Amino acid sequence: MIDCDTEVIRKGLALLEDKNYDGAVELFEQAKENSDDSVSVVLSLLGMAKYLQDKNNISEALKCLSDARYMAQFSKSNTAKLVNEYAQGTVDFGEGNKEVALIHFDNAKNIAMNYGDELSIMGYVLTRAKQIKNGMDFTLPIKSDPLVSLVKIGRSITAVTDINVLLKVIAEETKIAIQADRCTVFLLDKEKNELWSKVALGMDSQEIRFPADKGLAGYVVQTGEPLNIPDAYNDPRFNPEVDKKTGYVTKTILCLPIKNNNQEIIGAFQVLNKISGVFTKGDEDLLVAIGGSASIALENAQLFKEQKELFESFINTLATSIDARDKITAGHSSRVKLYSMLLADELGCDEKFKELIEKSAILHDIGKIGIRDSVLQKEGKLTDEEYKHIQEHVKITHDILEKIHTSDDFKMITEFACSHHEKYDGSGYYRHLKGEEIPYGGRILAVADVFDAITSKRHYRDKMPIQNVIDILVSGKDRHFDGKLVDTFLNISVDKIVRVFLTENHHSLKDEDCETLSHFNLRNICDFITDENSQNKHIAELFNFYYSGNKNNIEG
Ligand SMILES: [Fe+2]
Image (cartoon, rainbow, N blue to C red; front, side):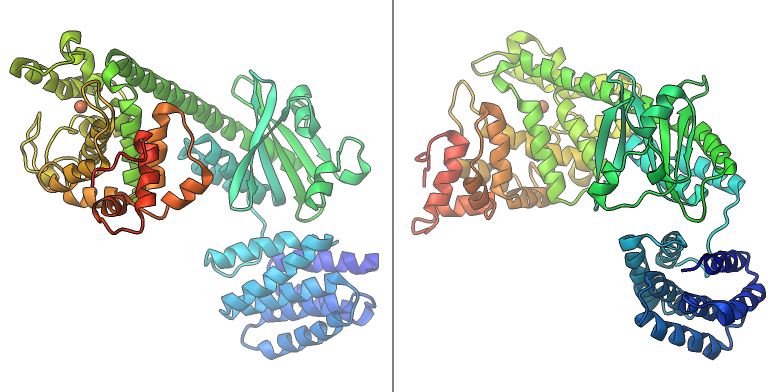
């Protein structure tokens, strides 16, 4: 494409952005007469400008677009094809044909991705495709007001406390504010002297880490100076290795340190490929301002993460200390946690609820701290007085957890943990709650707690045969347990249950056995054992091998 055409097209796009459709139509009409190589591009844009100028008369616009399409088909120019797809999508979107518009924009995007267009139209296409997906009104991209961007970023990030989510939100908002194709936010890990971030990888995201003096981000973190590179491939500081691996074409780069209130560098922004032109001093200033609010949110999230880790290590240590005192039930708390999580998964509970379940399961027997060793570790039968004393542990669990000062969420953990000995018919302890009065989490813990107790070896007995275990659960439906939860528990595939058994003895589950067991649940295993003619005795034997280490431990 000849340079003067490129200039005209840029000017025309700027007029469209400013909603000066009359001006754009005039410019493209003139250019149509004079252009040679890029007549298809000009015609596509003219069609789009005409459509935006007068939506009641789209036949003119469509005529331009179809002529341009015809020419683009026989042209070697990818830009011609790309711009035509983009213009066609714009008209379709305006006419409410969102699905068709998205196909056109996807086509445009794919062309742009594969060769990198000289008009940088890809950013426009991506923005528009996003607008359509979000059902936003028809407006031309993009022109953002820096102040509005700042306020928007401030608002989005103050609500986020998860550091990984925060990194993504800041990167996404910055990308839009600066009008760039990509943005990565790197954080400085001072202890390891590394920079790290989360980058999108298909549907997932992956942590990347590298030494804090490597790359452009490393440079700005070390020197505190911004880097504004207008032409990456002509700059010795740019390392094209990543582009080679990913197929991405880096053109312009803006890299800036992120400083906290004390002017200490806590990370860096790396922004790639300005949608139109190169990064300006205004972009640098905006990025410094964004960094100002982002640093507060990032530091808070970092503190929140550390606090969370501290809290988690604290409760894990507490749980281990109970298990250490009560050798008979070693590992009980962590297995109850795993069974409760399996049950919560099978019930389809959300992540937040699962976290509450996890914590309350680990802590459910914390009250055993207040039980005398002579009772807790007694090997023979307990006297009535001793039994009453050991029952006090749930009330003590409640009193201990209640005193820990944390957020409101923790109150649910206390409620769940202290109701694991309540029974569905009201005959449990210590508050004698009945049915749905018992917190849901408490009912989940009750099933997991009993299942672990009766599947664990005790000094006075071997592991209970699995069919007896299942009998106890089933006969406890709506008496001891919430019946629906027992049914759900018995539906969990046994490969998952076996994995919990194995946490005790560090044996591993063979892949082929895991696959075999994954097709059956506890109810099936019980049926295979009790049905004398079952063809699946070998499955029950396999399960028992992992359960008790003895394939023959089947009492039919
Ligand atoms: Fe208990």
